[in-house]
Image 1 (cartoon, rainbow, N blue to C red):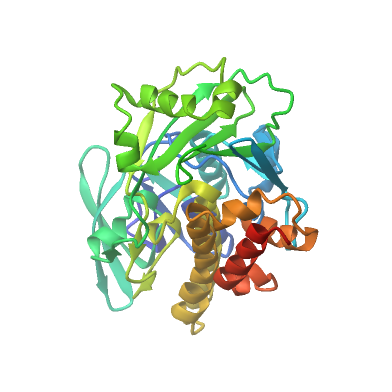
Image 2: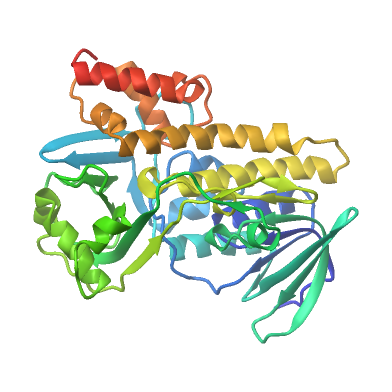
Length: 415
């Protein structure tokens, strides 16, 4: 591997989807880019169900052919189950323009594919490098780092993009973190050999199952192309702790046993992969940008895994930031508040409304209502497909008011 240069136009922290996308876009526009990643790839990461809107950014970064040809599990929608009720959305039947299909991916493989494609395009990625300090001086930043051997050094750069995800490097170093206003929830998850034989099960859709007795507990089931699934349960910590089991694997199976339809679906499943847990993953920051830096994706704000919005927000932020930064490095005057922070948060807040309405059951009432009007269903479908920034959609323009009205109509049975 080549040695780290002493200077680059842009330093990107993290080689996950947002880092790879941003680096490829900036490199294609003629800027020198260095990416530093703390881990080696492939590495495990949660968030395996992409949304169709992601494909626009994969294409922008010149990686669409590689992703399409890899053999990932095709995805065209989302299905929902709750105590005998069933609902689904086909992402090809949506209000917004743009791709209507995507993939369900094992993130270790997917993230490495994107990073490898960025390297093929000429991006310099350095693995097992840890950022230890950042000092902003006039028109550049001095970034300190250590390599895998513990050697310390520095690099100067005109701009830093933090794509470190849950590592949240700049928020920690620059004291930007602030508590999320979302309730603290815990997720326990694993991969399984699912052995699903139900002919009514559609592997082309993520399956979200609601606990039959506790509406704020839910399961994800994300099929992969090799006969495995990602399986997880999300609940409050006290709800998980109330089920006393010796291991995370047993905890997951205990919850599955409480959901009869899911239990039947996974009757032959083999739980033979390590299980993991994460708690208090919702995060927020005081600002998404500052002098010579910007935060991408989860490094800025993460809501909740229920609608698989994390990678979509990450890629959207990467595209937005890279294109704004290109203009800034080219000598244009840019306004990160009005061009980046405000519009990015518009979509994030749309997702926020959907997450909140999921847990207070407004959205659940909508999803499981049998007689939804197609026009309204297509608008909801667009947001679930990732198009949370399309202000032509009334549920993006006024998400909370529209959701309140729609949920009430469904509850009254007149939609």
